Structure formats: C-alpha cells, structure tokens
Length: 496
Image 1 (cartoon, helix red, strand yellow):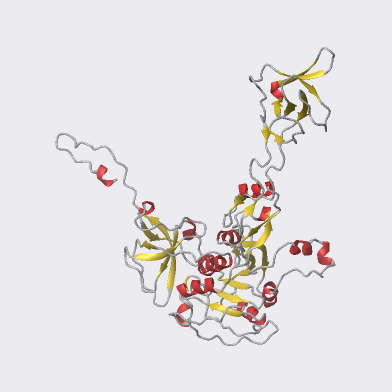
Image 2: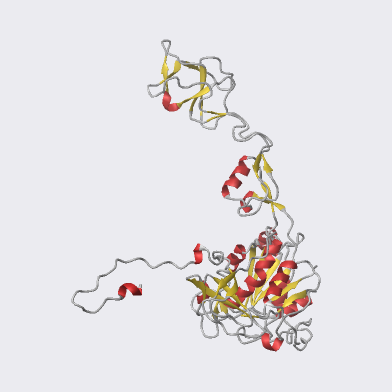
C-alpha cells in the first residue's frame, strides 16, 4: 500500500469543476448512494485538487515495478528481457546436411550402403536437408550433382553427374557442423533487450519454452453507460461507444496489456461487482464451466489496474467513489485542476489493484489517461516518467486562473498551433494532433515556450531548433521578367 498522498494544488472545488465534463465536486464518503440499498452518500465537500504536475508525479510514485516473471515465447514479443539468455547446448547440437542428396565417404563412384551403418570409404547413403550426418560420412553430394546408375554387375552405383563442379564434393562440403551457430553456454540475447520475432525464434531454436521478462501491468477495462451503443448510428438519448474501439490499443501503447473488457450499465450493484476481485476461484465449477466461461477466466491473469469510463462526477449514476470505499479502498487522486478531464480519479484497493476512473467524455478521458495512466503504467512496467519537453506556442492563449489546460495542437512551421474541435466530447481535433500543450493557468504569449507531451500513437515532440521543426523553404521558381512596354508587374512569384 502506498502512503496517503497530501492534497495540494491551486484550485478550489468551485473553480475546478466546470461545465466541460458536466461534473460537480464529488463526495468521498463510503456507503452506497441513495436508492442502491445502502446508506445515503454524504454531502459533497470542498477540497483542493492536485495540479496537473502533482497528479502525474503521484501516479508514477504510487506504484512499484511489477517483478520479472517467465512467459511463454508467444507472449514475450515486445517485452523486455530480464536476464541473459545463453545456449543450453551446442547449436546445432549435431552435424547435419545442408542439402538434399547423399552423404558420402571418400571419392566416387560410391556404393549405396544400408541405412544405420557406418560408411566405409567409397560408400554413400541418401540424406535430406537437416538430416543427421551418419558416422563415417565426410561430405554431402547434392542431388543435382549426382546420379545413380547400374554398374557392370547390375548393382546401383552413385556417380557425379555432368553438372557437378570439379572436385565436388570436397571434405566437409554441405555439412553443417555441430556448434556452428553457438557453443553451449554462449550468450545469445543480452538482458534488457526488447524482444523481436527473431529473438523468439532464436530462443526456440536454443530449446527455451519461456523467457524471463520485466513485469508489465495487466489491465481490465470496465466500460459503463446504459445509453452507450456499440454499432450503427445512435438514436435520441443514445451515444456511440468511443472507448471500445481504441482504449485497449492505447493502453498497449502506454505499456499495459488488456486481458478483459466488460460493459456494464449505471446501477450501483453493477459497479460494485465490476470492481470486485475477479480472479478465478479454483474451487468454482458447475454451470459456469459448462459454457467455457470459467475456463476462459482461468487462463487470464488477475488485473493490476482496472480502468473505468464515466461515473466520476456527482450525479445519481456516478458510483465509482462509493464502490471504492465499500471495497475498502482509498482515493489517491480525487480530481485534477485541469481541463478537460478534471474529475479523473485514481484509487488503490486493499488487494493492491489500482482503479483509474476516466471521465465519460472521450477527449476528457484521453487527457486523463495520458495524465495518470501513462505514468502509472510506466512505473508498473519498469519505465520512466514520460518527458514533457517545451515547444513554442503559435498563438496567444488567455489565462484560466487555477486550471491547467490540455490543448491538442498541430505543429506548423516549428510552432504549436492549437487545434480546432477540441471540446471535451470531441475527438476530431485530437485525431489530427501532433501532441498536447500543457497550458499553465496564467496563459501563454505568442512564441512563448510551453510544456507539451506526445500522444501515445504519435512521434516524440521535437526539440526546439531541430530539423524536424524548421519551416520548409518555399520551392524556388524561375524569376519572371517584367513584361515589356511598362505593363503591370506580375508579383505572383513573391507570394509563394
């Protein structure tokens, strides 16, 4: 368990909770909300939200790296190797043929020997690529370089054909020697390597079934809202699910791995059940096992982080805080003095699981995920706190006292230009953005350096003055001579 974080920051609840996420200052008391069969929720209280910088630092500091563990080769792709991998035996561990043809001893012609016996001089035996070189064999004659014909006694004899090269085969030709790739104990993959498909093939070739990798957070997604539809055009009072198609992918980009996704309605009972420990019970059986549900659950790892969508405000259907309290958990972050995404919640349950509550609006949720989820998953996965470099701002942004604003931007001629269509419920501006500006409460002047962070799917923020942010020079055009006779001058060449 992490120590209880101090509440600090710059904005009181009356300032931090505005209209962008349709939320009011939440209460933090325990018990079920009215109408849920429990005690009435306590009246909302005023508190100081964490600043944006405080919140992301706390999200990183509250988690310890998940210990390294072995995983099967199929699951090791993209993971970081926790220890050196050495050859368990010679690779290959036996001499084999590099060609289809015949294993031979000495020069030809060769008498064909019976399989399983040691080859005497001038004897041969058929062999395929990868086949074990029999005792006594000195080389391999390629199938296209030999031919079998009858001798004067009618017995089959192997001879070199007209396509054979002079001296073929010489001793050792077309034989893969034992330990040719690696000797037993030789280092194959160094610890700390990010494993790619070739590494996994090499490990399999060396005889490994599992590899030790650094820990990585297992994430369970809980998508809420009875008004949410997952396909087609939503009707009046309905909204389209924006989290299902992309949230698991973004979590993977941030360093987590999603093993389960559940959708629930807005009742308190559904919330409570979704946040309870869902680790499969080994003694459970019966009906669940009949339809494969229990079997599928048993194969998945218990979650380190549960990410929820919606339910972080103070309406009658916002039950996250009450469910956390009833499960014995505590809030680490209850609101951030930022916009959009201010009602984000980070909590910890007694079993060590973290609960990350994202607001229901898509852009607000993405900003909260980048602010809290990125640092949290980095800490659990042995990573570092994501950098927040500076980029010159391409416009003036007014002050918003007490709140940090997260503004998607396009990088134009080395300057960060705030994107349009960046309301808390919109995604159009973020879809075309190069990054997100972290605008301080006092605002920004034109050309002033502003902190910014890269999007999980985007390129890193370029350093000021780098080639990536320099303006492209206009293509040169041939100079145009003014028309003769003192007519009007064509200035189009100067307009680019």
